[in-house]
Image (cartoon, rainbow, N blue to C red; front, side, top):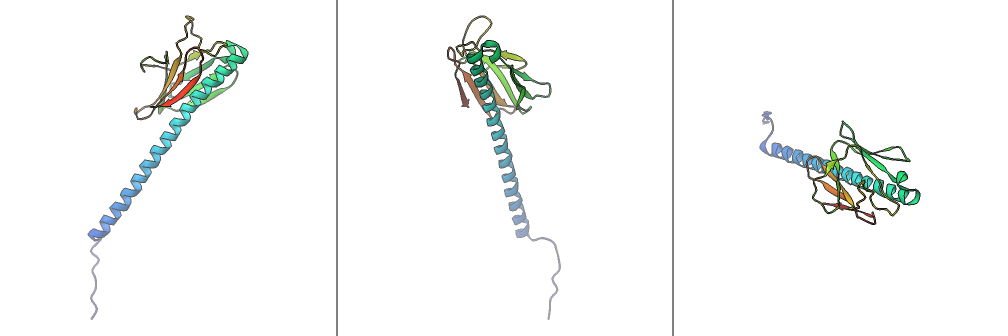
Length: 165
């Protein structure tokens, strides 16, 4: 005697297994997106530091005009840097903001970088128009505020440090 099994749909166990597999896949996807965002943020912060170091080195070798750099935030949010000797270099897209604070020990109420030229004198320190040298720092932040870094430019020496906060 053979009994025919009626197909009534999925059992509770099958539904629970499908939900748990789906949850694991969603979790892994979210984790990988977060890792990509963090990696892009680190690259942007390193590019800012590299641009500052390159400009400082050129200035110490050739004079203030050759060591100037221009950070520019475009209307679409992209931040680019242009060295006086080189072409434009992409720093980051609109998901990160770069701002500059004159004075490396001041609070972090930086002004958005929008066409600011940063120059160094031949000793490697920042050359401000009023003749002061208080150093400065570039603050790099993600739009949601979860990622933050500072490229600190110390007074007198002009040496830089990259600090993730």
